[in-house]
Image (cartoon, rainbow, N blue to C red; front, side, top):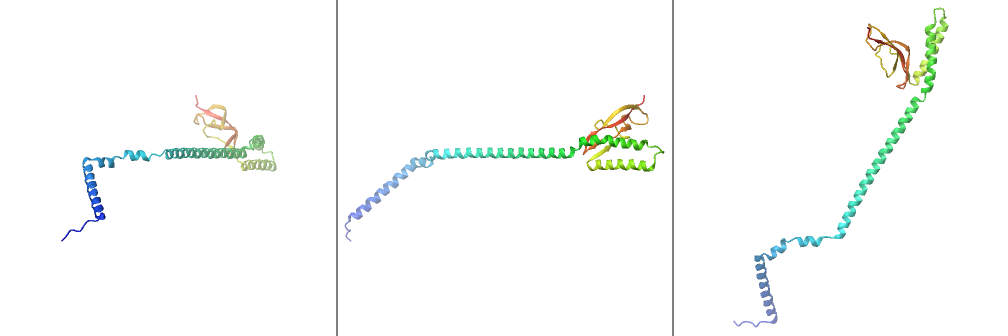
Amino acid sequence: MAKEPQTPLDDELARQEQEAEMTDQNVEERLIDGELEGLINDEAPLEGSLSNPEAEVLAAQVEELEQSLSEAKDQALRAAAEAQNVRRRAEQEADKARKFALEKFVKDLLPVVDSLEKALESMQDGASDVHREGVSMTLKMQLDVLNRFGVESIEPQGEPFDPQVHEAMAMVPNPELEPNTVMDVMQKGYLLNGRLVRPAMVVVSQKAN
């Protein structure tokens, strides 16, 4: 069978196939020599090529803004805590002023109570029941009013001496009592809402010689 004559298209196809074979052979040789492997594994040039100065600037700005926001939050918390402390102190001062506004008035009223108590104690049998009842009722009214406003008396007869609320007027040897025991109350003390208005004047026992 006679061979068909080649056309220019056939010549071009044959030439491309020959070049492809040469390229494949060249690639194989370079792989053997490790040239392409070195290029594939070498990532340093790629990393360097990805560096972006604008991105670094933006990252720095974001970090600075986050720090500023954190500082602003901290300052806001501190300001809120300080405002709460100021409000709490103001409430405490107002409460204290409300509780102890009558302190001077109570101090001035206590001698009246003392006088009524002494008058009631000094009444002899000669005094009429009406007089005794009148003084007793007046004294009770005074004490009730004081109690309503937070005033309470201190009567430490037989209790251990407490220098916080007692004032020792005398020390008397007494073998029947423990030392530093209140033997006698010369004048009652008073508290206003727990605060000492007047200490109790007392006689305190001491160890007998």
